[in-house]
Image 1 (cartoon, rainbow, N blue to C red):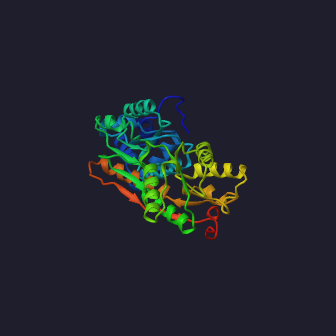
Image 2 (cartoon, rainbow, N blue to C red; image 1 turned 90 degrees about the vertical axis):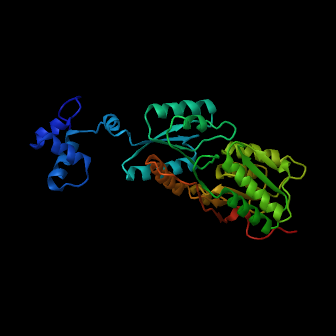
Image 3 (spheres, rainbow, N blue to C red; image 1 turned 120 degrees about the vertical axis):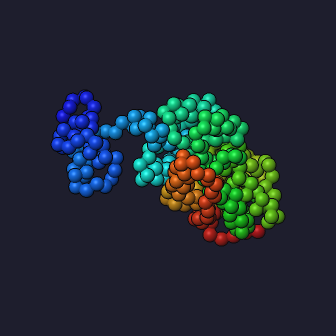
Amino acid sequence: MNNSGTRRVTLDDIAQAAGVHRSTVSRALRSTGGGAQALRIRELAAELGWMPDLIAAGLRNQRMQLIGILVPRLTDQVLSTIFEGIDHALAQQGWQAVVASTWDDPSRQRSRARMLLAHRVDGLVVADNREDDPYIVDVASHGVPILLVNRSYPGFPSITCDDELGGRLAADHLIDLGHRRLGIIAGMPYARSLRNRVRGFRDAARARGVDVDDELVVHSTIYPSGGREAGARLLALPHPPTAFFAVNDAAAIGLMGLLRERGRTVGDDVSVIGFNDVPEAAELHVPLTTVRSPMRALGSAAAAEVLRMVEGQKVDSQVLPTELIRRASTGQAPVPA
């Protein structure tokens, strides 16, 4: 317990309570070893309520041991899972993560980045870069190492999943089932990862002799409301799709709700595939076929690589594997010809 009121507990306080010199306390608190005496000093420091002065330590060592994380929104389950992977991996190395949400808004992206730089972060992990307004180019001029995760941009190292492969797997699965009229809920056009999923899907379909016309590709947000809105546009076509690929699970779930309201039976007369494999995907009334991405592993890898960058090491981009997880939303048998 801190017996010193609101005054910050100092090394001298701990030294006096332990009956040792201040330098002995300093050595004990900087290490994790040191024997019985060092362990007792650390226990005593905790009892007194001592907290390290990270700012002073950062000024001495030229590092704050802080990594800034920029994400569109932490309510997105994919991004929150990636962040958990980053945070856990950093903590294991004695580092801290500071996260800021930008809502994919260019002005907020710049202001949040400036805020993190003002907190003297040692590196940045960016999950919200936009192709149409790459603010990270400006941020990089400040000399802070920048690593992208879940999205990519030329000239910056990134940790992503194999988005194109995931799109190809989805297209091949639907075509194997006999579908030829394929609709795509494509997400935001400024997110390269989503564009890569669409590209992989369309390329695989074309290779199988199935053209996905532009009218069958609808951009939207990647939330359930976006899936519903894009799905409504596709269902309004004179010849609506018999199968849909949504570039993430949340949009797919919104689409499935719309299809149910319209009297369509998902997995029977219409098929739906999502992307990411969030936990809810397997628990839906009609479990969702999806492309599994290694969300937590993306975060862990991003943490490891940004720390290497902080150490001055050169890092290369990594692409982690994806796989198709087949469930009832794409049915159990080929579509009748």
